[in-house]
Amino acid sequence: MQVLALLRKKLASSKAASEEFAQADREDLKAKQDAEILVMDEYAGQVEMFTEEDIVKAIEQAYQSLRETANVNAGLILRELLRPGGTLDGKAVEKSQVAKMVQEMLKTRI
Image (tube, rainbow, N blue to C red; front, side, top):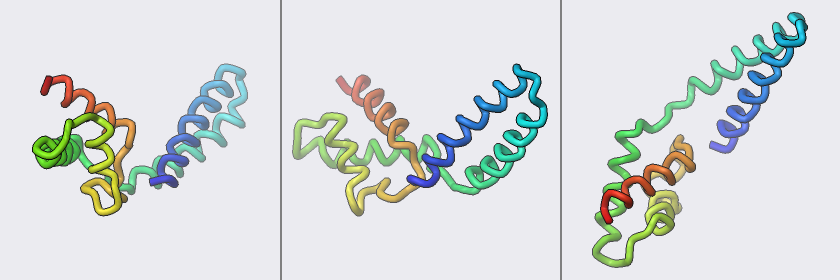
């Protein structure tokens, strides 16, 4: 996941550089960036990500299991999901996306 995060960060940087090179009429540098983007897109695309439905199911399960035992909050749910052995531990998910989804789910529960 860390490698994927770094790859996505580099992809964003390369796309911004490509746009800047295009604006500066540097087609040679733009072409180089575009070639790098294609390679990085290919690698990033091979990583299977959890679908939003899978993440929602995992959040709901964590919420239900914690609801009985504790005052449930976003941090508690995230710790449960991402702890070693947790439902999303080591899975290809964006932690920021999961955190937003947990927050949204909790808003509807209040």
